[in-house]
Image 1: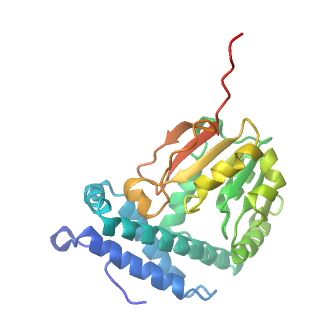
Image 2: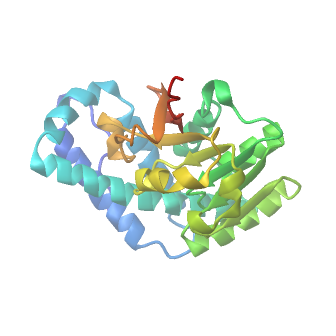
Image 3: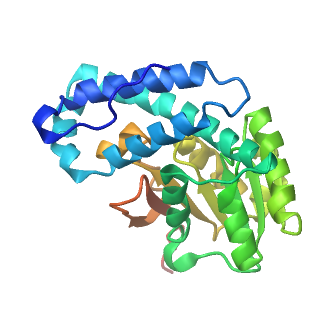
Length: 278
């Protein structure tokens, strides 16, 4: 990969659009050259760490708002979401491979994610008797490992990437072989665990997450709580944004905004039917 400055001084600060185009090129190149080894892991960690810093800097918000209002800016944001999501998936694979090969290390991106986990469900956090499903579990299912180890909850994850599932299972076996964690690639309509889940987490890089929310409504408990990770505004450069929901099906119970974190959280509960008076 060729290098470009990830940050500049105020004196030579380039327009945000130019910086973002630079990131897009780097993300596209990193995703294209992933070969199952870890020799490019450090560079991708640095790239995503710097990108995380950019999207959590409120000073970039006004310029991004102007850029996003243009057709070219909106298109650029969509491309960045797609390519950065691919790179996040690759970075998880790097982290899993490092762990499985006896290496250690954390980067800014993963430290940021781990700090978000503590705030995931607010006042309705899972307990020992809870059953938690993670949609988009990836190669390093730290959310499930964290919840299962802290609470004793029964957890499950699903992902459509066979390589991610294989790595994720190896990571779980190594770090949490005694924990209640299962991983699979089943569609939600065929997932028995979904019917029992008390809590569902949908990853911010899952593009069709609101379609999934709609599809899971008839398949879930009446008291299920869904934590939707999302990013609006500047954070939408790294996450798929919040969308309107069917008000007859779902209620937006709470929004947990995290200014210093790379995503925010929308908590949804099922809309309770109105009872007619006698």
